[in-house]
Image (cartoon, rainbow, N blue to C red):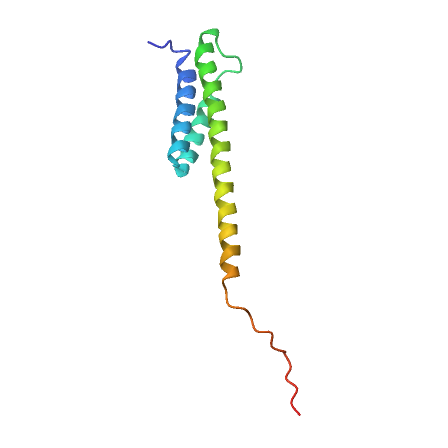
Length: 109
């Protein structure tokens, strides 16, 4: 059983684990609620955590690093997809019919 003074830190670590899950699932809409809950939790924590919270805080730090890595991985995927879209657009333009070069003013005599 978790001592009462460590419970909020365990909740913090679980929150980061949940964030990693949501990122992995692509459930970005749920992140806003999770971040709001975490902000409320952090606001209630003391400035200096108890020594007994060390394992939970270490786990939270590791989860936070994994969240950062997942965000970077997702960013790379999005950048690759965007470059593919641009390449496809350029290719499609190459197959478009040529525009006629008509003069804007017709001179008739």
